[in-house]
Image 1 (cartoon, rainbow, N blue to C red):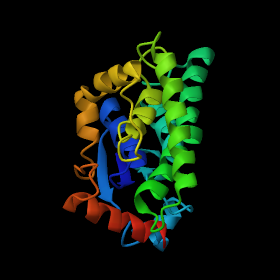
Image 2 (image 1 turned 120 degrees about the vertical axis):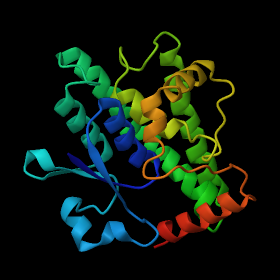
Image 3 (image 1 turned 135 degrees about the horizontal axis):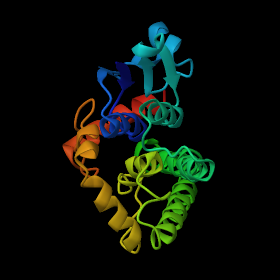
Image 4 (image 1 turned 30 degrees about the vertical axis):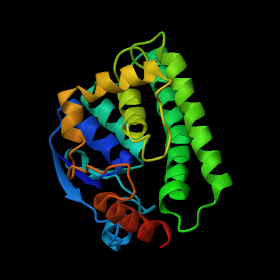
Length: 228
């Protein structure tokens, strides 16, 4: 049994979608980021960095794993799926996983901060992170023009990038001119396990219109985390 400590964020969904795809038994422990539960002593014993997601593998001497990419690799190896075992195949998957970890995630995360959450609108910062996010999306689109998935068969690389790219509108980045990326997003979103994983620990439906009550509440909550 896996204990999953998570919240409804792209990184959190990377772990929950992976667990659903692999069919591993897990128990959800929601972490309220606005209340700072990720900074409690109990959670810091699991993840010293105080971020979600994190897991504890009860079947492996209560072994804790933090960092979403590391969690995905651990789970895939545990289940023997979504990550090839041959050297080249494994490397291809990890390359695209690192593409998300080092590029897509950080750039979209900063776009979210400056476009949605930061109290002062600093346009050069907004432009910088939105443009870099779009550049990275274009890289994905170019690769997907000749490939159904990112690294051969469907893998944790697809899950990781999908969980972030699907939120592109919240980052203020459009993908209307990236047909291959749109095709890929649709294929992955149609998977039942993905749909289930995106509802963990709860389903979030936020309109991109900042004037909506849902978006306003979400932004206020995120601001409390960003400025803490």
